[in-house]
Figure 1 (cartoon, rainbow, N blue to C red):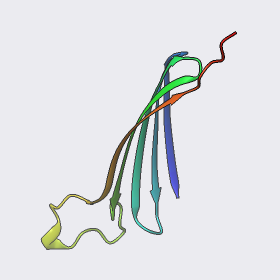
Figure 2: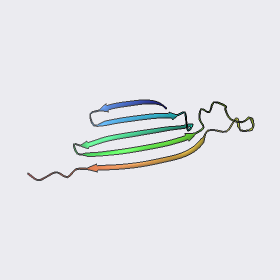
Figure 3: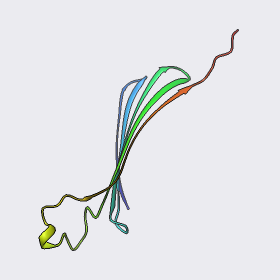
Figure 4: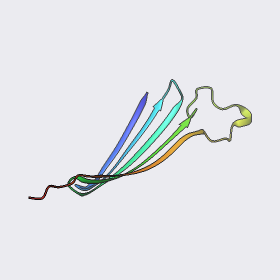
Length: 90
C-alpha cells in the first residue's frame, strides 16, 4: 500500500486536505479531498469528495484491444456535513 497526503491550511479557519492511496494487492487507487471551514468555534462545515479507480497500475498492463480505455471507475461520493455545537446561555 502506498499513500500520499497533501494538506493546505489557508487560514486558521479554512483548510484543504488531499489523500491519494494505492493498494497494490487489489489494484485500487483512491482519492479523498476534504474541505473544512470553521465558521466559528464549534461550528464546522465539511465538503468531502471521494473517488476510486480499479486496475490503474496493473503490472501486466491492459489487453491490446483495450489499450485506450481509461481505468475502470469504482465509486464516486460527494458529501457535505455541518457540525454545530450549541452554546449555553451564560
